Image (cartoon, rainbow, N blue to C red; front, side, top):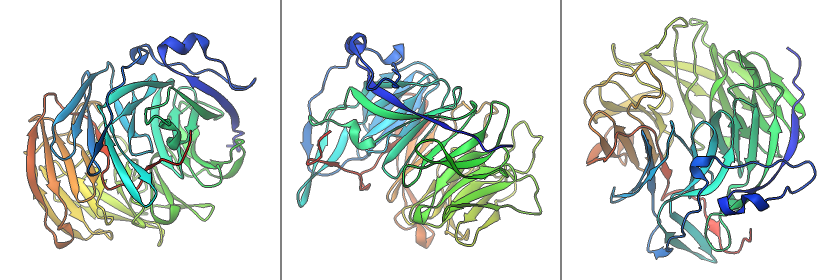
Length: 442
């Protein structure tokens, strides 16, 4: 396979509000205009902004027909937002907005809580959650990845990703902006891809076409290939570890990208051993990943997972009890880098960084993964010492204290009834350091 020649172009200033679409003009002769999807084109009335006494966390949960936004402390449903399609959730990068993907567009969801720096202290604000009119057309929405102060939204059917600065999502009036400048990079062929922002305006991308993905490359801001690795068949899944190290999954192991080079890790006893779902932590050199060994399975229910050591450049297989499995929504990390795994026996299991089992807590009844990957299944999101776990079978949200998991203990201290069957979960953190600065003008 020859080295791909990536093409980079500058996108337009995106004019999104429906009433302004007719008057939107490009930022330069080489710019292109991105438009929003019909489902999100209506103007949204502004809601009151209130100052709060402490930072807030908020949860977003998709369901068949929309998104629910909950308060992370009281667990009250603050807003139910109707939106058609199979919806996916990704952090926008500013600890205020989520990116809602519907297959044809990426739309910013203002979660309605944020922190603003003011000299030697902070101010905290809340408002009603809103699905904003800031939306980006994308054929085949897929991965949205944030790192190094940038966010990259990938469109599978065009092989293009749009990059924006998350700090630019909020204007001087503390509202979500209606226009946003992006940079667009188009890869040689469309594929189910990803783009990870690196330092110095470089991006780690998948290499492939609509039939296969064969490896990974790092490209610069002009699209020039800096380094490439062709030994990662069926590349899928990514994680960020400590010290800016990245990993991506292959059907026969994983690639570690560090110090400007790719390193392949695999397990010789399992020539096919897919690690296509991963969970990383910037507090840890270890990455949690799945471990599937049956290439012919229509749906494999693995009874082992893996831990990638990015320092030792190894991948270790860890066995689960017989008959116990998990899914792609089961993987998460604790505040100190602990590995968390939701398993089909209804437990949340937790492990030390090196894979040593610390303990488990009973969360729900046993469950089985659907053969349809879009169907609801238990999912997890973690904020500091708290894990939020969805239970679609009972329409509940379970809240688990992780304060003592290093001692092998955890506690389900609340279970909340939900108005809809939950599918995906994500959120904004009360413990994250991302803030909106009062001194920065956009």
